[in-house]
Length: 123
Image 1 (tube, rainbow, N blue to C red):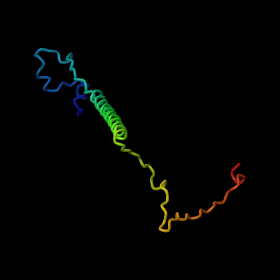
Image 2 (image 1 turned 180 degrees about the vertical axis):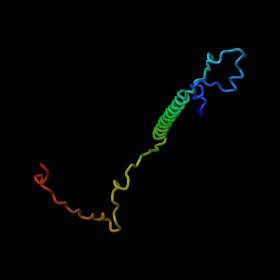
Image 3 (image 1 turned 90 degrees about the horizontal axis):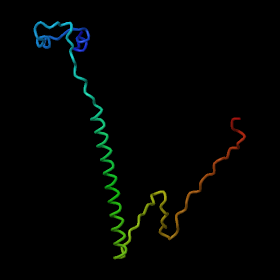
Image 4 (image 1 turned 135 degrees about the vertical axis):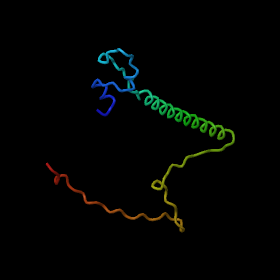
């Protein structure tokens, strides 16, 4: 019996509690009440609530910044003639540039792959 719980279950009373019992009390009828273990449910739920709230706040801020930027661009383009375009072509979608002679570069011919007939598959 190493742990205090095991001592309580076996009916042993620790010495620090035994000294607090008034004299003349029947020790066999003493009930020791233990404090309930701490519940971590509340702090965990609070942490999840704070994390969810911070994500929502960041999304709202991003949405507001997007609306402000779009309205600024609209006002500037209407009043000053300033335009803003997004170039979303990457390296794969970029158009080929002409060479020094003014012609477009030649592309390598692609090899055709042999076509298998459908009759070779498993039945």
